[in-house]
Length: 67
Image (tube, rainbow, N blue to C red; front, side, top):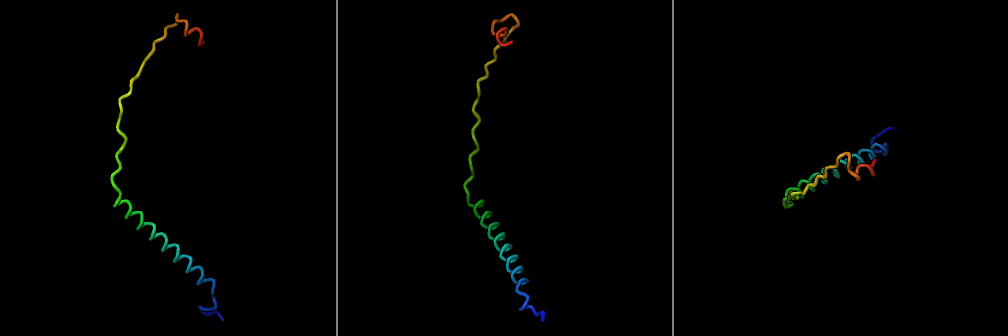
């Protein structure tokens, strides 16, 4: 007796797959709607940075203490 109603595990697998598909479609729609309604995010403004270069020659005391 292998009718469709007695094969409950097949119905359970089909129901699980349908629910997963439904959840995926719902999440995709929510992400699409939120992305469309979200205000554009301002990117960080570029600030000029100061760069200081210190030249050390081989006769310097700082160089001798480092090495």
